[in-house]
Image (cartoon, rainbow, N blue to C red; front, side, top):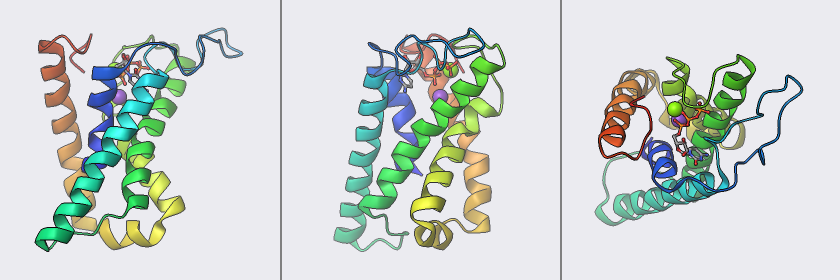
Length: 165
Ligand code: CTP
Ligand code: K
Ligand code: MG
């Protein structure tokens, strides 16, 4: 999951500039995605996730660690899926009338898991079902919100994030 966990904090660090929706509104008169989703955040976040994934591939190969094997495809799907999930969540948030940055519990924490899982299930199901066994799934469901909250509080302290969630 590391290639899926990295993109969000990196997007928060590097994000800004042109919004992905080019400031356009949806048919309901609200922003399609909002100013919290930018091209710079998306690109830097995905690149960082893939880069970490390549380091994982190298480590596992070099030291013969007994860990599930990532591939360039799997790390790309995990990293891209994490931020596509985040964008999908923002789209739904705007449709529900929630402002940029407003908390939406559960969705804010699991969007990246849903996106990363969906993309790997669609484009690399063999990898997904070999790696994501029931105990792994339970571990991910437990670890994700704890990690998400801790990193966001840290981001808030160091003034990288506007909200501690
Ligand atoms: N960010 C970005 N591009 C992305 C994702 C995130 O630039 N694709 C940056 C933005 O500066 C954003 C910050 O990371 O404000 C925190 O991300 P997140 O909490 O996901 O966005 P929110 O600002 O809370 O917006 P939303 O309500 O749409 O989730
Ligand atoms: K997020
Ligand atoms: Mg947020």
